[in-house]
Image (cartoon, rainbow, N blue to C red):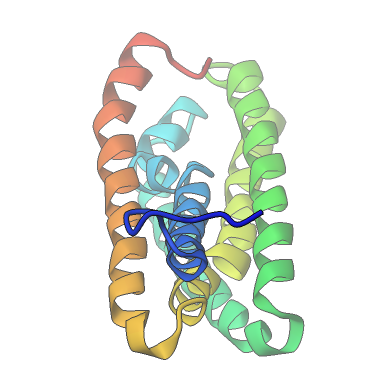
Amino acid sequence: MRIILSPTCLSCRQLAETSVKWLTSVDRVAAQSTGVLVVNNYQVLLYNNLGLYGWLPLLLYAIYTSWAAFMNWVNAMLLDRLGRIPIITFGLAGCICMMIVETAMVATYAGTPSKAGNAMGVLFLFLFVTFYGGSQDASSYVYGSEIFPTAVRPHGLGITIAGLFACTLLYTEVAPTAFAEIGWK
């Protein structure tokens, strides 16, 4: 039996290239869906909810950002030794776990005088960025470019970055309304 494909059908190669493009966009969407943009952009408000005011939230934000930059360097140093997929997978799981605990800390201790509970909330924000900076930030850009053949790498990375910006726009636009209407839930 002979199957005749019409010229409008995707060839196996075109299908594979399309799948790779979507895979790298999914990687960027997953990295942004960890909550990193909301944590970064609204971190001072998160610290205020945990009972920290004045200059202390700004100092913690500066330390958080510096620690994130250092963890990006660590990520870049480990990429070739450990591989992209294991680092990204482990880090994504770590980000999810840290965000779950952070949300529980905010739900339980926000607005209470418990210094230990609020300190745990701050700790888990830092553990979150340890996982994110150490596994997602640098890795996903490298993975997003290297997965494409050299001839189409610039176009493929462009699609990947477009997915990043789409997620950035979505999450930073809905976060203020979600904080106002929903809160931590």
